[in-house]
Length: 361
Image (cartoon, rainbow, N blue to C red; front, side, top):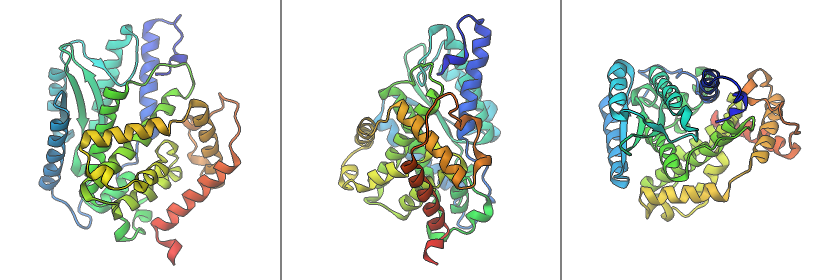
């Protein structure tokens, strides 16, 4: 949590407002666009099948992590029931394990966290949060409603790739994301965030301007790496899904989403022998992803340099209108790296071209 905007001399109520702003603004910066496709798009997967895939996946996690309680919330018509169940499960004096915070802000952070979960349920956007109850039970709250984002290849691809439907329709069928594979990817990605808070630790406090965004970048890189590793563990090798995923993440700057530019990390997964994943259980794959995070860790200054380069690349790509306040680094005097800018521009253009098969025309 970046408390720079919350001077200690202000009253606690002012700090609460700042805390709320910081958490929600961070979320809004990374929220994918609403799904553009229709529910009845080609190759529709039934709700019951999606629910079966979800439950099978969560059962594996319960076996791998018996000390972790997984609370699944689904939103929709179940929101009131979900929120009541959330309150009953967390009980009195729960602690958010995702963010380092002083004891005096425990209650306020919980209020913000619960409201964020409610917002995600209302928007039907997948999310995960880790809490510790007063009885020391660790709870991963997974808000996920599969039909809202994985009912068909069109819907799955639209959910991850923040582009107009007319662009999605240009993507060849074999490059659309498999709906079931995407559902499993989202589950693994969100579960990693809980495991990361549990075993790697919370986001530490700092006065640095883009500290929250910096840690989100690190977390998203690691979560995608892990989820792709889990995909290879199941299928035994890279698949058309991993190729499509790599292209979509490689085009993230076209959606002003610099923190989800994870294609290089995905490429690192694909370079590893598949047996490293196929011979491991879920804990083993997590250990591989954790090792990658530690090995490829970039410091805060390097991240600021990357953001400066990403902003310059977006300008060259003609996307200046998408550069939000959250991407600005005016607080830090640093110039973009020309080499990195060229690489980002080239990678974005190539990913978009390959997605629409323009490269081979």
